[in-house]
Length: 215
Image 1 (cartoon, helix red, strand yellow):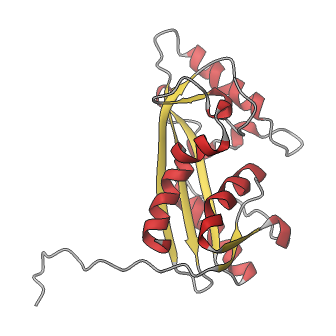
Image 2 (spheres, helix red, strand yellow):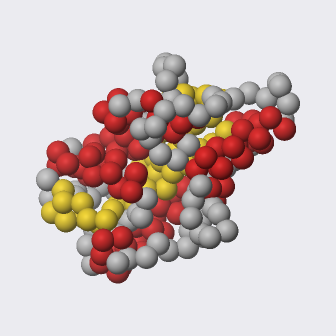
């Protein structure tokens, strides 16, 4: 008999079977990174864009809410298991901004995303804080898996670092050229893809997903 103050029993994670899976993103950089992470596990990634699935409006106020929203949307429309990523840059001196609005800072009037402009906005905001403002920052990634029956599994990863200026490197995407991970002197955009894959926030979240659903 369970006592009333016992911890509730742990709910087992659902296993992800080999086969097709929708990557619920139109961001080619993210799709490329996630596809590389999934490759060893017998998963056949298909992008939402290639299936004609549009991007839903991200109305959540947390990374978890937005990742789950996107995963549910693609799973509902495709009838397949869907994997969504919601990630962003959080700058300590800016109170965690741009955070869940990371992509919004890159939005232009014509609906495209201008990442150099977004990086400039972050730098200008830091400069406005004065010379004493710290440059500590971290990337957050939440990966959400959603099955067509509505079951969702979500995993959070982080990468700690500092911001640099001007931007350096051409390999990454988004804010990678201004983010220097702890323990290195190079930005994410100066790392080879295999190096970044080993230490990124997305890789951290993916390790947790693998342990729970693929390991």
